[in-house]
Image (cartoon, rainbow, N blue to C red):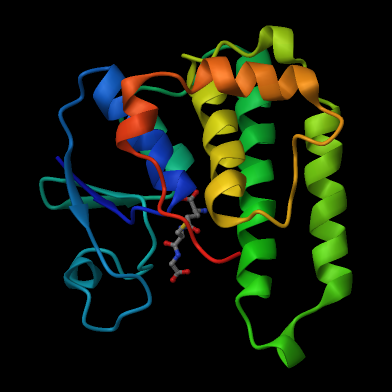
Length: 186
Ligand SMILES: N[C@@H](CCC(=O)N[C@@H](CS)C(=O)NCC(=O)O)C(=O)O
């Protein structure tokens, strides 16, 4: 199976880490984003990553890819943690997108909304329940790692020593090192 990815994508990073750690053997193909000539558009009209090509069938959207790979948690509590981690990632991604717009198109009110959402999610975490090797633990670590590398306007460590320690321990593994997102200027 082919996994279309972009090196900076925290969504794709979840699947990339799972592929390495669970021996899924997915073939990663880097694809340009927002490029009308991108080859993946022939299979994936949505044009987003991650996207999984299984034979002639393209599955996009991270939770659906997890479902297709049989990796969605079964317990409601774990699904709940995964949902919060993905909501955190989604909110940070749209906040980041706003920061990449020309200054006159940005919305400070929208950014403040997403900052509040991110803080709320982090403040509500039950860290003791977050196994770093679980899908939801990996998703949480990928969201935080994205902030470190590509969204430094959100200094999530401030006042969160326990989470910072959890993150340092959780990400000290080859699959995280191999999928480190490139730094961006934000
Ligand atoms: N809801 C999607 C979000 C994926 C997403 O936003 N991917 C970004 C990269 S992090 C993307 O492909 N952006 C390209 C675009 O916006 O055209 C998921 O769960 O996979």
